[in-house]
Image 1 (cartoon, rainbow, N blue to C red):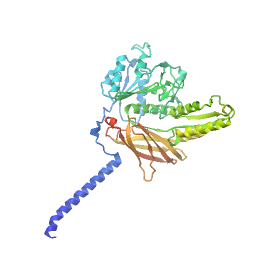
Image 2: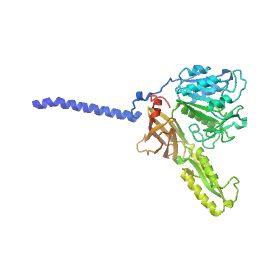
Image 3: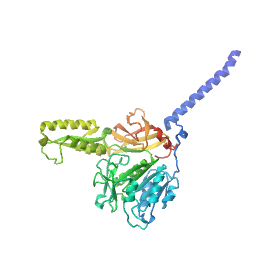
Image 4: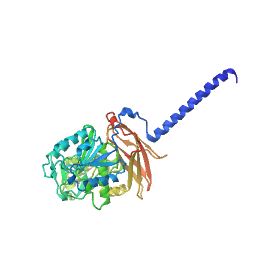
Length: 459
């Protein structure tokens, strides 16, 4: 080696070493990003972590009965490591900087306590309130529903007979009713004193009328509050499916209030908005079939809002055969234009039986990454199973990828700024599972609500 080469040799070795180190660092970053999601400057997002403690409040211990115990059991059933603490004094809760307050008995809350609870929510807290609100004095003397009307912002509150409180139903599709099929009754243990509020757009309703709401979601300032007419103490005594459905419904309520993700199966295949069919009524058997274009369009819109199955009957005798056929074709086109699954009642029954064999779960595996798993526990291959990931806060962008090599990646149906996204699993073989990772970006206004960076916490 001559003198010139001896001078260049250390420089070449050093450059090569730096290049190898840089390549190794880049590879390490790529591997970490693949595992936990894209890196973000979390400090710049003003992460709201809060204490890892939730409180269970009963404003009047003498009226508590089994309500607090029902929430304790429910919380134990939730797959969470967050402990549940209890205090009989609401003021103590609101000063504890806890992120979530559960209030199973709000009957004796005073005007001052209700105002402080709203202040807690406006400051960024989350609250779940069940049953009647502020309707009795401390000595249990009944008062009016005016405090409850004012607190929830509704025009009326009315007591229901026990016979009307034995089942809840899904209302307008929303974050709270993802566990309920359209028209499916969620059977409860009926009880005197349960109420309905006037809200035709609620997620949950009683069967009495369309406006007999059994839930109400409120966004107050930086926080959220959910009111539910029934709580975990109203679980059906014997039916395990109804018990699980109520538990899932309450879990969705907690997720919405806390702005954490929740996953649910969509009611219809291919992420269809609702289901429907058109039938010609030749014999005039359907007395309710008005047959006017406006009435049929109103039926379609009502079914779309609730994701229900609708059968449109066209009275041939009343309209004449030619007009009836024209109207039937037009309504069939309207169903397709509004993203309905064209299906008969038998098709719906078969689909619901197949859909019941699907299990799904979601967990957080990174600051801005979720892992979704879908399993077919049945004996038949399923196709076009739709899922909804309810982010429960505005998201500007989402992307999805498969966890297994060769697995087809579904398209995400998401509108920028929306709080949910849908996707469809093409094929699920018997006993088969698919896994997907979902990466997301919060909308700019939601950056202060970014997740805690601990990837091991459950959703």
